[in-house]
Length: 375
Image (cartoon, rainbow, N blue to C red):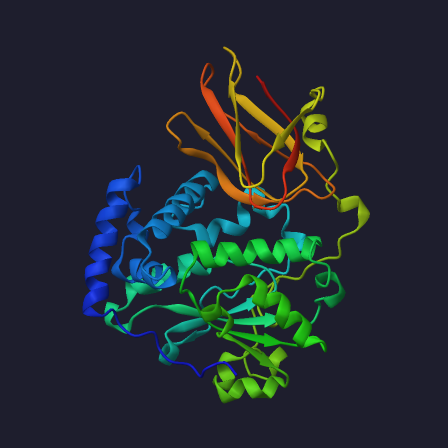
């Protein structure tokens, strides 16, 4: 059984010293130092605890997170307000049941707010805002998750190579590598009947301390053993009813069914830009190895486009000569549709690097790709 809730302890004298050591290390090693919103004692403390004070791992993940956040345009102060209106996000929203509660359901005695997990939101930015507003003596702000498994088809998760398993694995890695010590508790509601099977799947991807934060709720009313009724949405036998439109009564956007006409089509980017598709190249990449392809834009070219499929999972990013990310480092898999994208407003006669890092240490990867530039 998961342990009952205990507030994260304040930083010890030893941890206070580690915070300053980590701050100095990150300030020295990050190209622009630590972004102001991340440069707080509480935030650095959660990285120290999340990685057991392993400064090398922290630095690697912190650097990748900061560079990826900047490349994605997620480093603005009003991201929670603008996130769902970003062009690269907004077009997918009709298909996603995204939590829109923000931090409205705040439980002061737990120093945490509610997040209903049917998709994603921006809890990290809301956490940092709360910590900035309130006394540091209150400690780490966290969020409480209701993970609703009502629409989860367990059969999809029985195949270890399925898209659902790969997606779960990638989300787990992102949570643990980029957002350490932010989740206080996960209540798994509406669990499938074969919960033991799901539990085995979850255990593959989560660290022990994160696995212990999960509690399975067979009866919605059991939530009130831990949480006040006003904090629990009515959907889960509580009292809270969201009245902000156009979201449902739990505060989640209403997802429409995906139909074949919505499917992303192969090589759609070339067609939409009126570009003849170049001939693909093939590269065999050894297990655990990195392949980097560079391109120098011609005199008048400002756009860089790419398209690839890979036989294994791959970490992909794009950077310039100074190794500043122009595209976030993302863990991707391409089962049926190629991964493709475009960067615009680049500098002609400049060199750019596309990096493919094979994540498995067991199998070589077959990469089919093309990279090209245009006006």
